[in-house]
Amino acid sequence: MYSDPYKDIYPAIELALRDLVSEDDTYHKTHLRRIARTLQVFLDQKPKGKVLEVGTGGIVPLALKSLAPELEVVVTDFNKSTTKTHTYSPTINGISGDFEAFNLDLEYDNVPVEDNTFDWILCCEVIEHMEIDPMFMMSELNRVAKYKAGLLITTPNIVSSQALTKMMYGLEPHFYMQYHPTREYNRHNYEYSIHSLMQVIKAAGFDGSIWTEDNFEDGMTDVPNRLRSAGFNIQHIGDNIMTVAHKVSEVVDRHPKAIYDISGVWKK
Image 1 (spheres, rainbow, N blue to C red):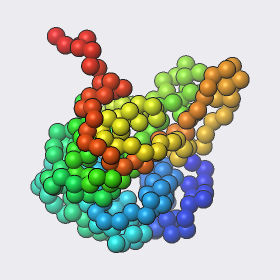
Image 2: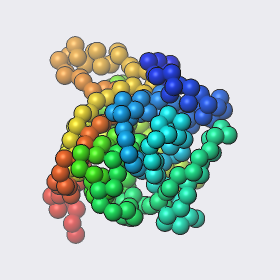
Image 3: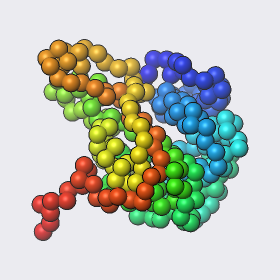
Image 4: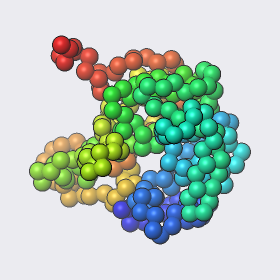
């Protein structure tokens, strides 16, 4: 866990998250720094208009309800017990809200809105969970985004300082690839570097800035420094990739070779 999740975070964001995240809320405490930085980066863009958060967990729209009440926030979730369009009503630590929501499998279902609907799209810790076709989701995000609309993506970095350290000690570098005894699907299926993620973003018709930060745990310096001393160009090793991009075109490449096998090797 990151040692000081509120370091250099705006006081309003800290206050909102302190209200939402209780001491016994293990999941959100583990992700607290990442959530705080996501909100800060997003608010730094001075967003306006209609916002879509895909794969919501509830805490981002609830925080935005107090931090940016002028935004119209719409979310997607995946709940087979609800209708395609419904009202999503999360409650976290006694704080609740109602949001327009779409019940979607992001790799199969179209977002039930017109083209060019949203001014901003948030895709936070979602793309790594896609099992078979992340560009289906990215293509849909392009379709529903207005021209020049903003896109904020966050995802774990497969070449973080922690991952490099694990590999140097003979361990798998993955962030969260473990299976569950309960047979649930909530695990990472593909973990990105900034190089693969930027190729996906550009293939989807977006362009912008990409960088890494340590938002899950404090960074590790020993192994990266030793690798640099050995002549390796070690960069971009924060454990969280953050991207702020804007729609600049229609989808450029439906199956970018950075993440798809387009060789036909696996065809029967």
